[in-house]
Image (cartoon, rainbow, N blue to C red):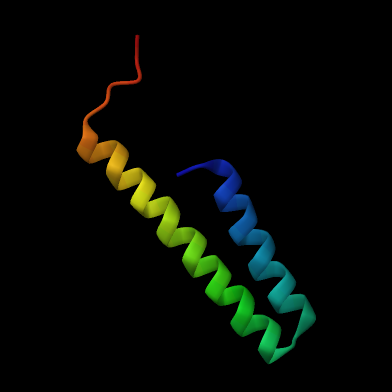
Length: 55
């Protein structure tokens, strides 16, 4: 997965824990899940497509 997406997910989880608000936790959890799903779809498309990025 893209390292930037992992960093965004980790930051979202940390902010949710620090804030301690159920609404913020729920919202950030959904954001993290959506970003994770997009990253997984992008990874699967890259693997299924069989494009070789090595020279």
